[in-house]
Length: 550
View 1 (spheres, rainbow, N blue to C red):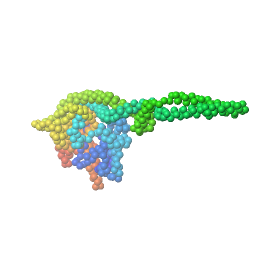
View 2 (view 1 turned 180 degrees about the vertical axis):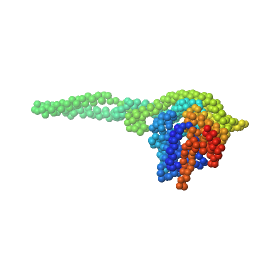
View 3 (view 1 turned 120 degrees about the horizontal axis):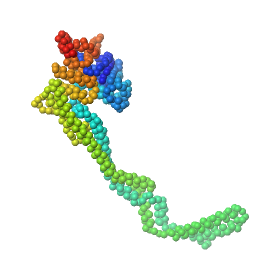
View 4 (view 1 turned 90 degrees about the vertical axis):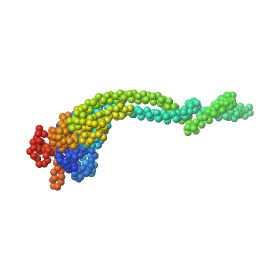
């Protein structure tokens, strides 16, 4: 509930500090006295955008501060979600600086307008002509029926599941698009992969393959040179073997004359042994050497294939080809396994769809059950408010698609007079009728849920007499469960209040100021008498005022 309001340097208000109690609070005043200024100031702490033109003295700071008792509002989770300090006595303050900039604070913590709006919607509801139009909107109509149907938990679960459902559907669509794109590349990737697999890249040593090709391609030259080498080594005249043996014999004759001579002999012995080994290897190579045109063609073809692959994939070695081969296989595997993933996601979507339908049906049944109760209560209240022939119909229709409200279409239909037909509220109800309908609905809602403090801004416009008395009774009844403010011109309603404030203007040094004063019992009698008969108060007006108050 709103416990106090402080306004400084706003519009025609120099400084105002007022405290409020629970129950029904009446605010009266002449037309133009500044009641709208009071609402404007309160609207600023509820998140309305600030305007420097609203500041009385633009050289000084404008301050509007409201204190709310939120003990019974269960708002700790909301404060935590908004990253705000929770306090039972929550203080909301707006400041408009001379520069035109505005600042907002909740419990002395700087905050933004989004947080202000989010929190204030749980604290106070200013009911104006503009808000009455909400009654014609689908969201508000669902809100009313679902409050009576106690659908809050079902709707929360539905909303969470619907978010998951839409996310999953989006993922499924992305997978299907990916599949379509991958299928276009699949055949080509498969061809490239097969081409790389056939060459058996893991077992290829390109250097050895090139050496094998050179050998096969030069068999005759190799044979000729091997034979020539053997001839040089084994020639009967001046052959290398004989020459080495002669050197070895000569050195053996002087080996005993010194270590250096013996070392030279040993080296020649080693050379002789190495030459013998070379001769043996030359024989082996010559013996194993053969011309094989088919093998030459096979090796040449393999080298050509590898070089073509290097050029095709713009690489220079086998390792890079192996990496490309692995990437291609990965793409192929992904394409082939995508069907399985899509089937799995489709099953998940189907399960969520079934669950959503189950919750939506539960929501629908609870709505359907409560609608006759709502209509009956509403028509009874409207009859008391001077609309005895008013008839209401709430049409609830199941639709195919999921929406944030489940799978229902909801429509409030209204018939004001006998003999007419039902039509949409916005087409069939006048402004005055909409105000009375809204009051009736608020009074019904108060029986089912904890409403925030509510301020009715001249909801009684266009009514009088017994109807105004009934409106006052309804607001009085509502104030037993919540804090209710009403700005009124009607004495019948003003007399119902637990407390009564008067808005009035004074001129000080040719400057007009708006002030708000809490009236005592005697002042209330005078104020209501003036509302009954004007400024020239008669004895009968005073007596009538006392009668209304009693």
